[in-house]
Image (tube, rainbow, N blue to C red):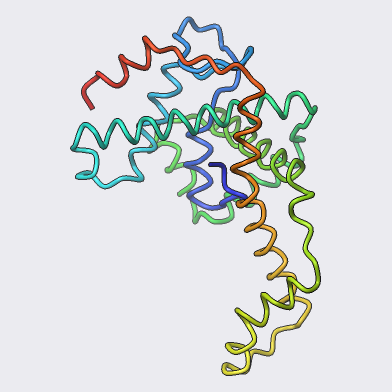
Length: 228
C-alpha cells in the first residue's frame, strides 16, 4: 500500500523510480494494466521490477515461487497506484511546479556531493523520468491526505493518552526538557499517520470497486513464465 507518510532520502529516489507511467505513451509497448486511459506497460513493469528486486536479498529470489510472489506484489502495487491516479484526476488534484521543486530540493539535501546523480545512473534512469515519477508520488500523497482528512482528526484526550503511554515515564526518567508544544506536534503527527494507515485499506478497496481494472492476462502469464 501507499504509505501514509512520504519517505525522503534514498528511499524517495527508489520509490519515484518504481512509479507508474500513468498514461499510454503510444510507443507500441503492450499494456499490462489499464484503467480508463491510464496504463502500465510491460516495459514499465519490467523496469520497476528490476529496481524493486534491490529490496530483496539475492538468495530470497532464487526460488521461482518467491519471485512470482514478488512480481504479484508489484502488480498489485502498480494497480493500486493507477487507481489513485484515476481518482486524483477525477478530483482535479495536482502538484504545482513549486511543490515539486521543494520536494526535489529536500531529497537532494540528503545526498552528499554527486551521490544523487550517481543513484540515478546506477538505475539507468534519466533525471526527467525520475522527476516525473516523483511528481506522481507527490500527487498520490496529496490525494490520500485529502481523502482521509476526516479520518485524521486528533482529539485532545487522544494526545494525552498517547503521551501517558509512550512519553511520560521515559521523559521523567531521562529528564526530557523538550518544549511541550514540540512534543505535542510530534504526537499529533504520529497519531495522524497511524489513523491514515488504519483507514487506508478499506478506503482503497472501496475505491478499486469504482473502476474497471483491465489486466492483460496474456502478458502477465509471459512475465511469470520468463526466467528470472
